Length: 296
Length: 296
Image (cartoon, rainbow over all chains, first blue to last red; front, side, top):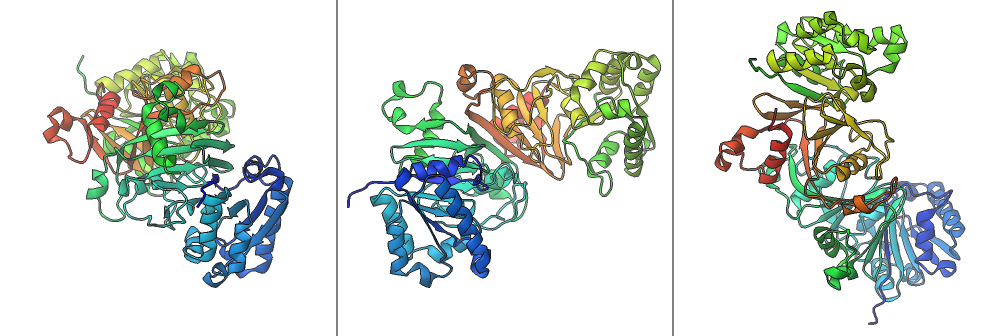
């Protein structure tokens, strides 16, 4: 098997589809530019599954936006059960894509319908072997990782155990993604998840903002906002351990990195020895970066 | 001079004045309960200074709320110039208060009108010698500290130098307060200030939430939300140092503590030796706590 890994573009929701389309344009550029063939999966959307007009509206909105962003081809797949997700014809469509883009909705729907199916396997294959870009926005972003949050209230307070984790689609490891991050005040819930799972690194992605992870081991923030990176590996999670279910708890000693749009971080530099690092980036930040993209 | 320090109650804005009034009730309880004599200063409000009806509306709203919260006496002082703030009669009213409460508006107005006046000196005297509670909400909260943010956009991105600091009223040192914290997505701007001034500890206070600092060296979070405590003393601020004015910058290696409502932290415990500490609280958190309330 020849490995030619593609890019991951993890979008915090509410990406601009009308004006500059900075994020969608970047996705197209990373998917072959004028040769980009985008396949959108609307699986996360319950509304799309129940209402053909809604599915059509989502499809047309993204068709218009991706074509205006320079893609040569756009197709939506409305896969709303595992039967459709196991259809070889759909898997072949995925294999012909240079970009698979997952729209928003509920991440649990996305994983329960796609997980382990032929379409799911085709997504991994086209990403790993043909260099396709895998992208998701909102719920589609959360589902990209190995572990993901599901459901749970948007409580700004950190409470024990109210945010269950579930298996995601497994494109990125050791990372938990939350989206609409600043707009929906999600720092508390992200930290509560880290207290339960300090081995995960939390990435809170703002709206109209994307984290781009390249196969050459660089990570970039694109769009209008920032990515809040929280490293809980050295945190003090005794308050979590001793709290009762649903109880709020103080969360102490997390390491925080705020990465605004425009910044690009190259993991190779630190691997070449500290003398090659961008001098203004710290060891512990590169260490977190290693955990996030070191295995990509 | 006999020292009998009072409480500081730093309110993140939008405190409940209608229903449970948890924060105002706590302020009254800390100000003598049924004997509480509350003096409210509306100085921060430009609107109150320009429109007598607006000043009256603020006064009546707080009068109703403080009396319903158990205070025996409420009086508003509408001091809109330094002449009024230097009036001995007003200073005497302050000296008779068991609580001085500053309403919202613009913190720069508050300091430029009150700073160094006889009313200002009376506030410090009644706090330090007569145990009065000093409280402020929103702009009134920001102005309580020695250094405070003034003006500046509510940009969620950390940009160099866009948020000037100015002298505040000096009731609390080494701390910078931001209010309406989660609701207005102010993590980025607080971190930008810390990058410039890593000796400060940032306290982001949510709406309808208060940080209570007691003369017995305990700190408590009260209300509906949380306090986000950011300790930048060990941060890597080279990106700040090398950035140009207005440029966004990554902010790396901050230490984050999220303190939800209901938690109470006693600094005396750590001073009695680690064996007296609440076992689930970490050394670095207590170290930050020492910086915040150790001199109170």
